Amino acid sequence: MILLLGGTSDSLKIAEALNENDLYFYLSVVSDYGEKLAATLAKQVIKGRLTVAKMIDFIENQEITLLIDATHPYAVEVSKNAMAACKQTEIDYFRFERPSLIAEEMLIADSVKAASIKAREYEGNIYLTTGSKTLEEFLKYLPKERVIVRVLPTVEVLAAIDKLGLTTDQIEAVKGPFSKALNRELLIHNHAGVMITKESGQAGGFLEKINACKELDIPCVVLTREQVDYPEKFSSIQNLIDRIKER
Image (cartoon, rainbow, N blue to C red):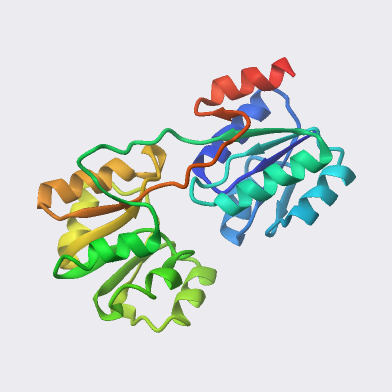
C-alpha cells in the first residue's frame, strides 16, 4: 500500500496516475479544502497534520510500503518528518517536486527576513503572494500598513488572517489559477510597488507573476526553496510511476 502526501496540484495528478495504473493508495491532506479535492480522486483520504510519530503509526497499522511526498516545495518540515518516519520504519521514500525556475536576473532571498528586507527597499504597497502559512512571520519584518496579501478564500485561512490585524482592504481572498493578464491587473488595482512570491514552479503560476511584474516594471522578490537532500527525487510523474512499478 502507498501513502501519498498531498497538498499540491501535482499530488492530484499523481493520484490520477496511480488510479490509472491500479496502484492502491491513501491520500493525506491537511485542510478541508484539500479533503474535498482529494475525495474526487482517492477512495481513502486522511486529513490532518502528521507528526513523525503519527506517520510511523499509520505506516505500521496500514502496512504502508512506500511513501510518496508530493507536498508543497516550501513544506520542508513535513518532508523532513516523512523522511524520518520512512527511515525508522524502513520503507521507501520518493519525493516528487516540480522543477525550479530560478533565473539570474530575479531578486532572490533565502529567508522570510531577507525577502522582507529587500521588499522594504521599494516604495508603494507590498503585494504578498506567498500564502497564509508564512504571513505571521512576514509581518514581523514588513510595515503592516503597506502589506496586501493574496490568499485562498477558505474559512480557515480568513480566520487565521483576522487574528493578525489586517484590514479587509489588505486581504485579497481569491483562488487561482492566475494568468499573466490577471496578475497584471491585480498589481495595478492594489497599487503595488513590489511583489513577494515563492518559487513555486510552473504549476504554481510562478512565471505568470514574474512576467506581469516585468511588464509593469515592478520588482519581484522571490523566496527560494530550502535545499534538502532527498534520497530519491522525481520531477516527472511518468518517471515516478515507472519507478514504482520497478519496485
